[in-house]
Amino acid sequence: MQNKKSLLQRLLVIYITFFIVLVASIAHGILPNFTRGAAEGVEMGNDIAENWKSGIPRMIYMLSDIQITGQPENTVEVEAAPGMKISASIKRLGMVVEQDAPGSSVLALAFRSVGGSAWLYALVMLVPLLYLGIIVLMFVIIHSLRRSIREERTLDKRNVWYLRTIGLLTILAELISDTVNWAMNSRAAELLAGSGYSVNTGFHISYAMIIMGILILFAAEVFAIGQNLSEEQKYTI
Image 1 (tube, rainbow, N blue to C red):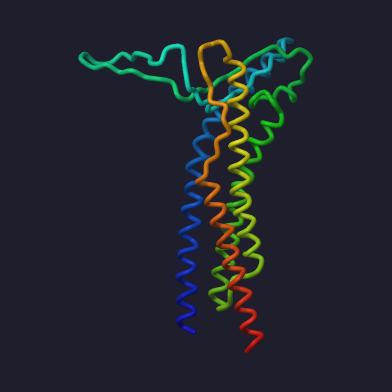
Image 2 (cartoon, rainbow, N blue to C red):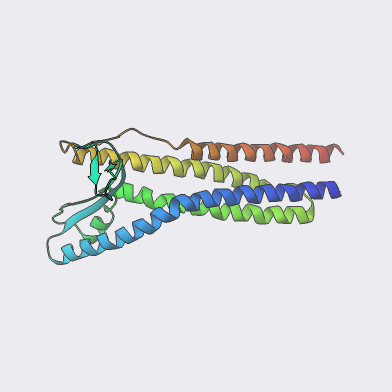
């Protein structure tokens, strides 16, 4: 009995460590972008409202993280200290596009402030909600694990489904983010056509997050198999 309790405690430590690493990686990738995007969004919102009040509504939207593969001049000379030469090249680009939008309401303009499309706006808003759901489910599982150790029983069936949900949400959030990036790069390529800038319009996937989601699904199935074996053993006894 003591060995079983010790094993469950080690499992809890491994589980919590894994989840802390996952939460930290999500926060590191999301929070800086969220803070920067919030500041830019407030400024854009004020501009949209001012234009609409003046009677000349204009649509203002942002295109972020545009991947540049070519530019009019390959390098840009940067002023430096005497005896030093610095050459810079543009690899990523952020754009703010402004155009006439006669007859548009403030609400319609606001929902098109990301990529010039309401569905892109919805997808960008959905990703943080998915990550929030992942974090909430993590804490629910950790709380349930602590209770399982106290009661010396196996992982609850609900936690297996929570794990599966976390894995699926991780994969879904990454695919949505990649789709948004592809759509923004494609739109930027249209706007920059003939300007000398070349944009990478390929669909790129971050396989690290996809693999992480698959590993979480695999862990859920391992727990499910262990749970079924434990129940079968109990019925056999």
